[in-house]
Amino acid sequence: MGLHYQEYGDKNAPLMVFLHGGGVSSWMWDKQVRYFRHYHCITIDLPEQGGSKSTENFTIQLSAEKINELIEKIANGKKVIVIGFSLGAQIAIQMLSINPSLIDYAFINSALVRPSLFVRKMIKPSIKLTFPLVENKTFSKLQAKTLYIEEEYFETYYKETNQMKSDTLIRILEENMSFEIPQDFKKAEGQILVTVGEKEKAVMKKSAIDIVSNNPNCTGIIIPNAGHGISLLNPDFFNKMIEKWIEDGTLPQGVVTIT
Image (tube, rainbow, N blue to C red; front, side):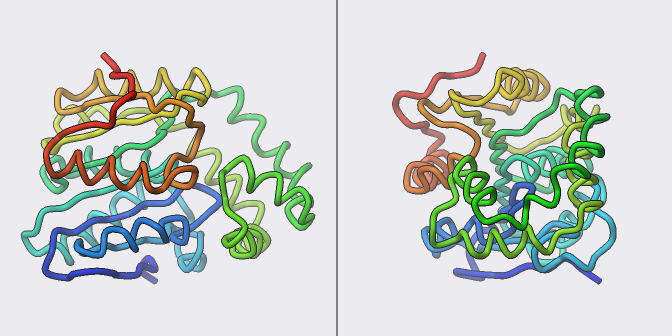
């Protein structure tokens, strides 16, 4: 079974592909596909998540391969823009490494690339212990708040987290905590914008520095007053930032450049 995806906008325009984070699915890009109606937008549910929950077991490598294949099938010579958040950003890095010439613009938002073997070892016992809490709406609302999920999307988020199996969540988190920059990332030919929030953990900021230093086409910025999830926290800022960067290479005022 192939990945579930949805198309929006102008099918004659450049292709804009959105890759969601772990624990959510394509609905997180609702305000982006509305804004970018003048692009050919595609939102993809990653393996074992959202509408793709009946696919093969999730891995970053598998996801990258399948999405690259889908882009090759749909793009048909058009410019390709890939926007990834968190887990989706890790997949975008893998995609760029597998096929360095496929993507013209890549937006890497909050990608972890510094593995933690200790944390990885703790994932399975921790999830087994805490997984029953996902059915608790109060707990889910607290989780949703940390992800900047608005009230209008909470029921969708709550439903999907309840449908996810514990083994799936363990696989996703283990892949997330094991990911590092592939050797061939340095060959990626497209323009790459790497972003991280000022309020994110130190390891996320160090990861952004690592990504920027591994490809000469990277521009990196730190977004002030933002944590993990700027597209949900401030979609208007996020959308205009992407649009201006693609159209003329400019960046928002007040951001700190990563050197």
